[in-house]
Image 1 (cartoon, rainbow, N blue to C red):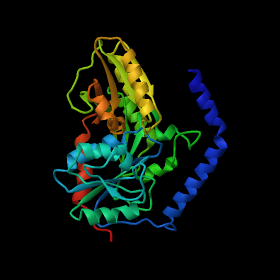
Image 2: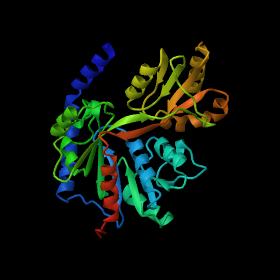
Image 3: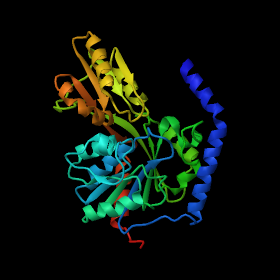
Image 4: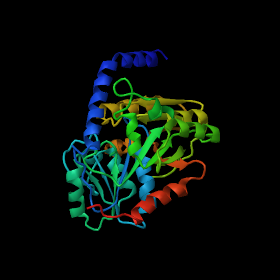
Length: 357
């Protein structure tokens, strides 16, 4: 409680820096809006998935949802920045690449969809032609975390905002979590409010719709988190977690609160080791995890992590093989039976795409 109060107070003190950052963002957007800074278009459907804030809105599960529904009907590829990787430039994932080389999220995509071209590159304007050179049969590219990257113009922009931290109630970094102006939501074609309560009422849904005020032509949807069955990080065997299970939660993601709430509803007790977002686990971290786990005394005990964290922990697979070390999968679940309408908007964009060049 005290630490949260201190953090909020400290961030308020940084308001001058937030105002300066916001001014820079507003000017940059104005230059693009006036076509002083140019946005490039490409001769194939580009789908951008992004947000206005820093992390924690569910971009990776959204990319995976799109891949699951598109890959059997279109030759689809993804392009990500490869955040926090130790390499630079363009690369295409292969069976020999690691999360250190391409980033945890692209590695996660490749593990789940090995037949889909998974590319990385900081400069998408440069990386897209390279991807098309390597995979000339590509028909659709999903741009991961690309809403602010206006040098490339996506034909369909999907904007995500967290129910617990709607962009309408947020402010610029570092006082708030916004890295883009709130008015930028008008550039989106689809807005998805993520991480909603599973029992979100129709009344609250309408209240949020009024608050966001979608523009003409914008679709607005609501999703909740759906957790799957935990599977072993190396063997992929599954396990059931119940109130008799003692869990050590190891995570380095932006917003672990939904997963914590999920565990609190099902377990008598659990322990947590929380690291910074996209944390690169060291051998010392591994020793700490192992020491913490060994001190747990319940007959049924296990370590649990997220899919993104698992990509950065696989380098310890030799040590993990003999441990009950499990991964918790996550998906978006659309509320109010609206997933078919969302998918129809996406597939309609692809099927009716007209080359802007």
